[in-house]
Length: 274
Image (spheres, one colour):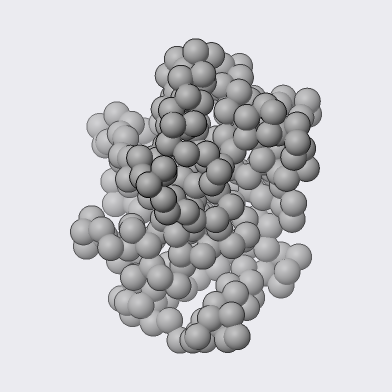
């Protein structure tokens, strides 16, 4: 049976940070890679994708699929520093479910990464870039992997993903979303029985009360969802940049008291689904 390797390259939300108080968890923004058989799928392209681009494991690939939850800066800012984009032998396949209102994904990336916002034109990158705009709540396939999507409650919109692999293992990625009674029911159905749930755990309950419209959720909601959806493993993700390592350790202990098989995603963490 083929193992699935998952690496958390960036686990912070909103903006990258670097301090002595955040060394253990890390300060790169959202990026997770999934390797299955000969597939390389990348979830979001925050500053974490830069470290992925420097990793020797990329030597066996010349193609990657990048699934973007949305196009806020913290989820795309690593793209022009991802080394494969400078390699003409590489093909990068970008997917997004929320870029159509802004002219489509290609137009969004071209705007963000061209003068005056970036020193070179987007079209100057040597790699072969391909773009797929879709509507959230649609499903599609990437070769033999089924990708299901769901709309998230975040300013400007965001998209969650469920990847169903040929070996029947499933990975759910829900980040940059608030929760409410309606979404609770929808998320429970979407996540049902997943082998791994990666969930936006930006806030404590108190912080969520202070910022109910920022489009982020809580570690407690993550534990509740993992329980009701009967997932096998929960990874807390999209950490608040204001939370130091000590606070994150406390949050992990609290979350594990409500859902035992909870892990804290940290920059560089590797896990396997067998």
